[in-house]
Image (cartoon, rainbow, N blue to C red; front, side, top):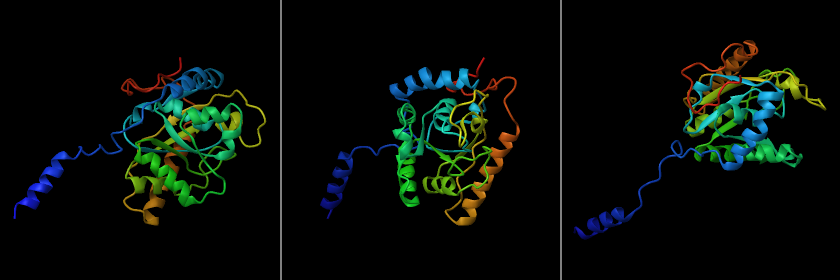
Amino acid sequence: MNRPVKAVKRVLRRRKPAEPPALIRTPRPSLTYRLVSYLLVFPIYRLLFRGRTAGNGNVPMDGALVVVANHGSHLDPPLLGHALGRPVAFMAKAELFKIPLLGPIIRACGAYPVSRGASDREAIRVATDRLDQGWATGVFIDGTRQVDGRVNNPQAGAALLAARAGVPLLPVAIINSHRALGTGSRSARLVPVHIRIGTPIPPPASRKRADLDQATAACQAQINALLDQGLISGPALPPEADQNALPPSP
């Protein structure tokens, strides 16, 4: 009578311990990422565009996270990954990876290609896989670049990702990138580009449309409020900012 029970116990003892959840297995920056970030993105952002960041202390340095931002320029993905101080996996149009210089940069910074004809379901599946791996996954909440750089027509994709994975949303405002290299621009303008990082928003309570819309509206309101604060003046980081965050510009 006890033989089956003893056999099960022996099997359980021989099993390997369960792997930790994705929230613990946070990917660390690769050597390629560090080289691209500090040798290329750093001088472009910090020097050419006089980049500054505020709110780095709000960035969770461990665990999966949905980074939600406005979108005004192709510069946004590499600048965000650099400014947040941790790699951010971004969904980007496959065509961007064919552009000389830009393609290798965004790939090294964590972006992954999605074909123009891919279904929303496929895009959500790929992004969810990144969250399951513990990545900070970036989503431009309007889905496409906006002429004025604001959040005008937010989509519920970011909220759906957060609800599926049970991870928080982090609103981020990219100030002036639409003026630096916006839609229709053939050359960059060397205007200041600053990034303000908001406070995390809990994942939606469910995947119901009402809950997703509520989280989406909260992201839109916080991002546009951060944009309304304008360029950063004074100390870019508070004294209590996370020590792992990138330092403010001089």
